[in-house]
Length: 320
Ligand code: SF4
Ligand code: SF4
Image (cartoon, rainbow, N blue to C red; front, side):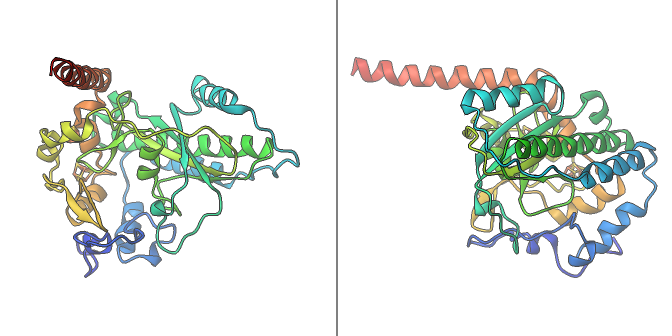
């Protein structure tokens, strides 16, 4: 708390601002000296997390991210929609990642000061082990987050290399450091979830128990559509994460943030607890969608309910 800067993270993040503007990096800056919360970010790395895997996974991720990518092959190979989808299926089949989606890249997802010159983004999700993440906020859960960030980095590097070998430009984006692109809105546009009240994406198969990485590319990959499985409605009448968050950082109502109304986590409340508890992750672990099998059941119930409402509307219009 002593390292908090005079400026609120919520102000940096644009809470209450009515107009659209690019997001600013509040935390996880590649160079912490570039941001007001840099001293807090550095503190995170000075504390012994109490689990050896933190150091092991950080070292692995550094090695992965430093691996040189191959040059782009001279001839571009377009394998068509089925071929690209087969490539995604292969990445899941060999456990490189657990889900893949693609979207047209949007400037709306860029952090301020960044540009990208590649037109599409492929987003990959890697799922946490539920038994591990459900120990949050213990260091055991933080270690699982680190393991999945490593896996996500490897997935992005693997796909970026593959695309280059096929003659397409590619640029991997890996976390947890913020780069050019905000991953969550890109993932949602690529069909990998909806925004939950706790500020993370939720998808039926994994709940919010997953991490993301991505690849920017000019490859003509098939695009996915945002999915609606009732998460937004569900969050409106659920307060499990709100109640479970020790510093009460998860706001009960949507807020206006840089011209958009959305669920919001109070950065100034979350960060000190997050820092002191190896990345926390309580809100991800307690979300009912994250429990194995539950998210899929909730999505099926939502689909049945919306189909029933639509049938009801159809039959009443026929009767009329
Ligand atoms: S715990 Fe409930 S309110 Fe929070 S994100 Fe999950 S479903 Fe939404
Ligand atoms: S990470 Fe922890 S402190 Fe932050 S919002 Fe989630 S539960 Fe609250």
